[in-house]
Length: 396
Image (tube, rainbow, N blue to C red; front, side, top):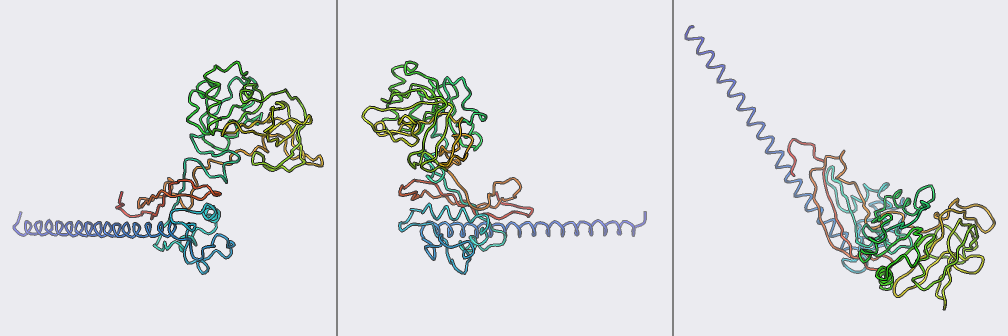
């Protein structure tokens, strides 16, 4: 091979090496530049997330009555800043939270502007949760938060808890409401009763004699110290709370008062039930919500110590309005059960959805108090600010 040929190959190799080095340098520069941009985005998100959280917690909003504006008036021209605070720092208004939730589907982009979230592709997600639930969604219960309700159907041999029989258990399962379901193992529930705020015995078919002295004492102590006991259907065990029972079959009851225990009925409506008890209590004290034709309580509640005992008959039956028209083909429909897991609700766009590549996530958490119908409930507010990540490098 001639000397000129060696020289040409050397030049070619050197040129290719130089080009490769240029490509690598360019790639490294682009990667470094993109990573720098992502760091700047993260810093921007951190700043905006803390700013938005502070505005929500320490401001009533401008104007403070923004939650009363109609959907059409809910625009940045009328609202310069969103705030959730009542007149007291760290105490948030449940009414404002609820309004923000209601506007989530139709005015989400406007709420971003009012929070000062202006970055390209920036989104937010806000969650509020507490141990005891929010009154708006918990029916006549004190709460429907997970871990608060203990449930059993004990010795029920009629499958009253199932969907065809309009069972309470079936309702919880259909609504996705978390409860501790002990099934037929009522003894285990009674052994763990102090874990709960609410216990439900659905058509338990238990006599007072079926409970040991310790089990009776545990249940009486639970209610006497502020717990809530709900019994549906048969089971004379309810007599441990100093009431008397008489069987009811295919009989009528009249709604005689409005009460949080019921929904979607009026005084004068009436119902027929397949079974249950007429409840009587010496010395009075019964709150008769549905009155049997005999004058005794068919559904209602009474105090026992500092707690409350609720009784409700079978779910199989028919509810009529005062003029005889059918309102519902079952009686569970008017029992004001929780509408959802009331311990948490969320506003905004969840970055945890699998279809969203939201690697750039900033989270700010604060412990706050929520004014829920005059009760201050300690809650956790989590505010997420995020941006969808489309580049080759994303910060973890």
